[in-house]
Length: 329
Image (cartoon, rainbow, N blue to C red):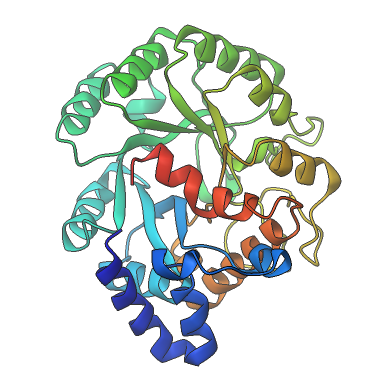
């Protein structure tokens, strides 16, 4: 991001946050990042954030997106439309703020769930424009939320459909984000895909956690072990905030922290061992997720999460540097 634009949005955000808020955001600039600070301070102060897991939903506006990004010190954000009807909205927001938005080709509609190969032609065409940075959120194994009448989805990661998609993504140096419940067969198919296409940059969202709907007998995946075997596998910390932080945000996955925001041991190990491939993300699949208070609390929760890591550089890698490398920012 250009320094002038970053300071501009820091200033706008600072008007609402006061001096301390402005300093917290401005610290993220390239100039201030070089300032020497004590190791404890480096763990608390997070460089400018890149949100790698945002969703365009009906009713959202460009002003709302940028306002919340400015408030939270988020320099860039991935936007993936929920439903094809919101594709135009993603494009509209991107055109208004091309230096801030990382648009993805939407896959969250029935043509993708049916494995209709015609949607792959569309993905290739859109990625070919150079505007779109990836494809997602690709629903591989998903049980849906009954209250929202969502369908059950089962698209094997090693199916001919997804393999062809992976070839398209690699051809355009793009990224794929997938949602997949950690069922054994689904994990095996994901590993087959990662072995088939070792150049594929794939983010398995939600840190390998399992949904709370109809999956009580399935435990979380040891995604760290998978990442050991597959250097092209990434994950994020999106949608795994505790209920105390996101009581009405529409999120339904077990948290990676306790209610006080303290990392559970297995997830602390994951973030420390793979801090070079874990990404910051919030997950905003419903309009209520775009309200100011939950958005602010989720960012504060993420800051507290990375502040617990022993390596002072891990916070910057997770909150910014990994995504900057992944998306060539």
